[in-house]
Image (cartoon, rainbow, N blue to C red; front, side, top):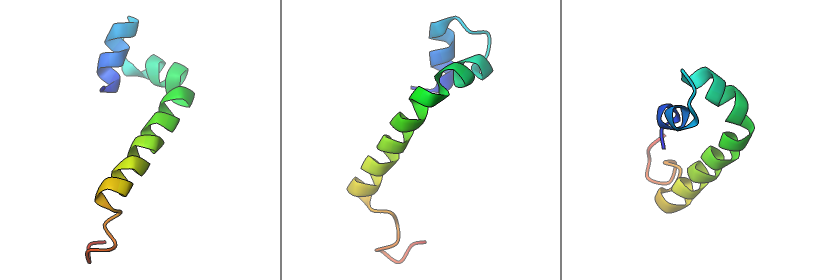
Length: 50
């Protein structure tokens, strides 16, 4: 879900407050998602891409 959508749902006027308040909660989710994508699609190094 885009940060802008979260911001609107929380009633914030912009994304700055949302990012400040929820950054510690969002970072692990983003990192976990990136790790899952790496496991599914690889990190790009195996297929000659880099």
